[in-house]
Image (cartoon, rainbow over all chains, first blue to last red; front, side, top):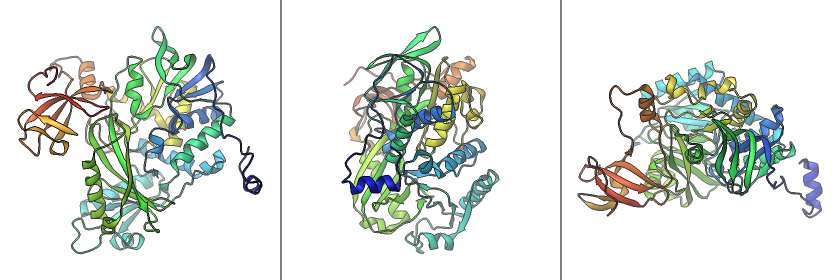
Amino acid sequence: MRYSLASLLRRGLARNVGWTPAWRDAAPRAAYDVIVVGGGGHGLATAYYLARNHDVGKVAVLERGWIGSGNTGRNTTIVRSNYLLDANARFYEHGMKLWEGLSRELNFNVMFSQRGVINLAHSKPQMDGFARRGNAMRLNGIDAELLDREAVREKVPELDFSEAARFPIHGGLLQPRGGTARHDAVVWGYARAADRLGVDIIQDCEVTGFQMQGERVVGVHTSRGDIAAGRVGLAVAGHTGQVAALAGLRLPIESHLLQACVSEPLKPLVDTVVTFGAGHFYLSQSDRGGLVFGGDLDGYNSYAQRGNLGMIEHVVAAGVSMMPCLSRTRLLRHWAGVMDMSMDGSPIIGASPLDGLYLNCGWCYGGFKATPASGWVFAHTLAEGAPHALNQAFTLDRFAEGRCLDEKGAGPVPGAH
Amino acid sequence: MLIKCPWCGERDAGEFSYGGDASRPRPAEDAAEADWLAYVYDRDNPRGPHQEFWQHSHGCRQWLRLRRDTLSHEVLASGPAGEPLGDGE
């Protein structure tokens, strides 16, 4: 069923009887040409672009739980492409262009809202750094505007502009095309669109091992039986290390907790995304009115999907320092996702050391915004057996070849971006 | 999360800072490049017991070695950083 204003009116006036499921709950077949492991945004986007852009035959997505039950529903929904390094800038900007047409492309409203993303600067050197990043972005064809203090005040007057501010606001870097999207709708939209192109979405299907033929992966063992595959792609985020270990691989990844929070619903307060430049804090307001914010990693390896209160106190302190009026706001919920932190802060997309097995992981803090671009290039990689021009820099062998994509310039630490 | 410091006893995790995976033996200076590559970048990243370094940075400032479950956050064993860990308490 194609969704349109006419279909909405027709079904609505008929008391909403007759809506059909948006995708089939498929049972696994004995064999597929391509299997994508992981039914989050990245896995489903990969399956959709495999079916849309490439002629690869039968495609399946295997999901251990239900689709979108992992990090896709746990992020802070921010979309941006404000990167300094060329490889990152081009990749995320391709994603930004896909975001701009995504609702129409999928015939599903992903509520993409280009409300702008402002990074605050609290010192003159930080303004210089932002000028450099903004120039690099513009050279890569990405929109960037350097704002002075008064321009920031005009856009977000609730920030701390007082003389006593511990971190005075000198200005900021704005990406006007950045914004937010409805994370669950991205999962549902890609699932529905992939299903319409013949992709089997198989839930409650945990991969428990790999079928090997010598050094080649030729299928997977799952909780719902063995499935043969021409090629297998992993898009399992924080659990990449676990699934790759089933094939005997050891990767440059650590799994860490990242917490996010939402406040009680408020009247419209902030109509853009703001990030604090003197600590790790980012804030936006959802359409329901809740302030959605997050901060830094809890800081130690974990698969727990729940964090410690100490980090929440730290995040809230940063928030109140940035926007003092938050101090009277009540916190509604907080939760954590398991992040696949790569050792240079950039993703890994490409071949694994085993034939037939491909990796899409290392998303660190920024997996959600990458969803369309990640699916686009991973589909190309799986279909062609070789990387797309946009993920050539993201292959696993970059660590051995000394071409790390270290946007932060911090060396091999699993805690960047 | 409570962490047992061998010198100060059980304290809140907020008093400690994380020092990372303690299970990786440092290769010899003249070891093969592949050994150094694996040491610098690759991790076992287990879902369960994990050996790691912590520093009691807001306490006695000593470095310690823990075995901690990465799923339950339970601290299974702790001792001085320079010594191998026992089996538990």
